[in-house]
Image 1 (spheres, rainbow, N blue to C red):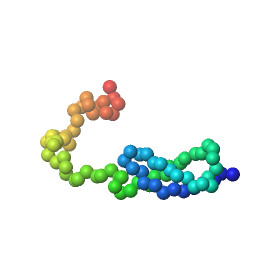
Image 2 (image 1 turned 60 degrees about the vertical axis):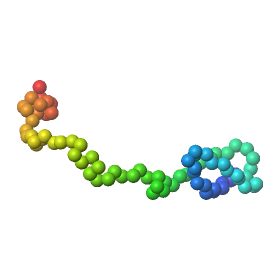
Image 3 (image 1 turned 90 degrees about the vertical axis):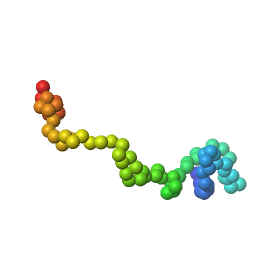
Image 4 (image 1 turned 45 degrees about the vertical axis):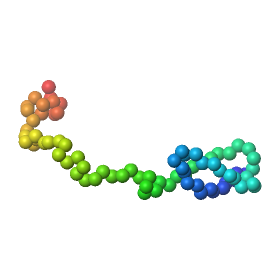
Length: 78
């Protein structure tokens, strides 16, 4: 028969957790499973809109048709 116990802990910066189990837990091999619930603080922050504005330029002919040899290469023609 397996025994389970739920312990709520906070994972510190060093990612080390010391557990003290109840006295009635059987001695011997055990399996430890960690279920972490990310908080809003742990989520990656989004970048502010426009933070890279002005770092690149788009050529005036960006939407112009491609040269024939390049267009044929995209279409798989020799």
